[in-house]
Length: 133
Image 1 (cartoon, helix red, strand yellow):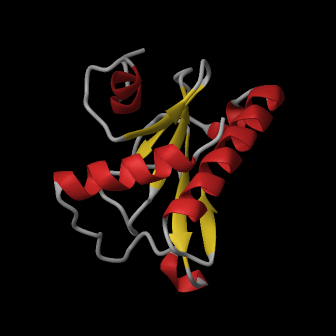
Image 2 (spheres, rainbow, N blue to C red):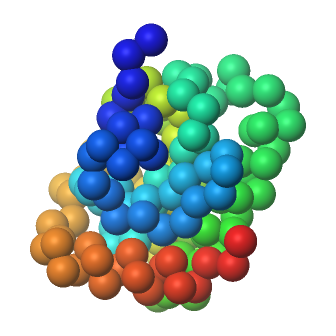
């Protein structure tokens, strides 16, 4: 199976704004965010559909995502961190963590937030420093 863009990010072949990682999971900023702080959590194991993951790995992924979400909420002013699993655009399981203030904020058809590289770096540093793995 050919490496997905996410696998290439994990391998360091494609740059990203990394938030956190451990031996099984990787979190980084979405480069086409629907909100400032929109983060993706993936398994390092390349797998297309999240619900094909073994139960134990899926559970660990959610615990990892929770720790990242807590960091996002500390770093980015918001009421909640919304969670979405869509799995259409990239054939590699991923969870979207999006800072939201209302249900309408979790709209993937909305115009994307435009950020500079410096803004991405600053956001990644703020969230990363707030994540406790």
